[in-house]
Length: 302
Image (cartoon, rainbow, N blue to C red):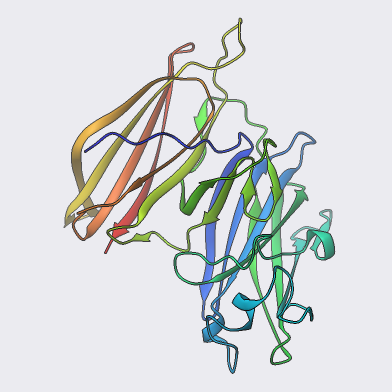
């Protein structure tokens, strides 16, 4: 395996993400961010496969021709997307993702992921705990309203032990102008534009992109930064055993030494990867405390 190209940093508030719902014309994804007030900044993403909607405008229709937030001619946008988190216990609050905190399209125009879903995103600080998420999608082109719900567990990130966040697969990581360290507007994390991936499927010629965060490392008493060694090892599924797929190492491990940031994000092109199921194992060693932590993520190449 060749070494990874230049790393692309992801802001240090990124915690974890998960694609949790995919049915018919909609899918959802959620990201969680560390917040300094004891809450968890929760970002909800909804994708609409517009050509699946009954009598809806096909892909390439009005929503792609319009300016951001508008249909051609300055009329209202085709879709309004709102969400509400309702606490699963009587003592828990509810949160409305509407208005300024509603789920919006990208500021530079409509945003689509690698599967062609039109994406909408919004976020706010939420108290950790279990919720039911209610989504509402109004398609003004056909005066149709869609709704569905799902369970959401908002995590609590007060744990200070050395550990890694989950590894998140991305459709795209791109640098943009910006200096903020956190989530600033739809699809913008600091100086990166991040599109959540709809699934774990890649094709040859695509970029393989992922990001994750490192929690609780010791810091240098002089400059206040960590000293981390990172190892990436890819595995390929060779056969199915009694307990499922059996993975064997693919190539040599990739070593990155003396990393001084807690957030890592990388992309590299998939070229001539055989059709198979793969696994990426990330191991990070804290050189100051001599602790290690490991996380894995599986993906498929078709």
